[in-house]
Length: 157
Ligand SMILES: Cc1ncc(C[n+]2csc(CCOP(=O)(O)OP(=O)(O)O)c2C)c(N)n1
Ligand SMILES: [Mg+2]
Image (tube, rainbow, N blue to C red; front, side, top):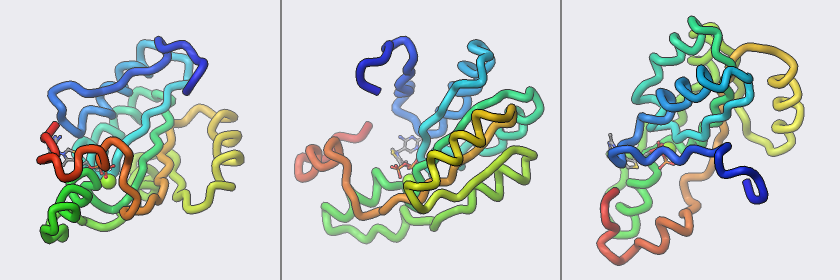
């Protein structure tokens, strides 16, 4: 992202609420109408408004949704683990979001290897249908932002 125009990016923090990503991305994709909008999302967040994939399909919006799928409300499990509290209530398993995207008439791919990105991107760019990349990530890696908050009460967003 470095060295590119800041106007190209939207950081979605409204109300500190997860679930907003897809609605904002739909708006940006409709406004830009250039087929080059990418949403980076969490699995728990996308599942909150997954039905909006129907609108993406109905309006023929070209959107690339990259879901970082750790099978959990990651922000919660890292805080719970740090406090020594049982994390099972925040783990729901790796939803097959690629299959769900296909069910809505969109494209979907499960990504488990870095080498998949290049050919997947070339295939995405060469056509006009929106796509969900269900990218499997570890639930054991804690982001620097979360790590900084650990042991300090974690200040809820
Ligand atoms: C509407 C709403 N509910 C609950 C929260 C608390 N919350 C903050 S981050 C988070 C987990 C998000 O999970 P996911 O989208 O899978 O992203 P991850 O943290 O796993 O990368 C939750 C539940 C919130 N911010 N907004
Ligand atoms: Mg998650």
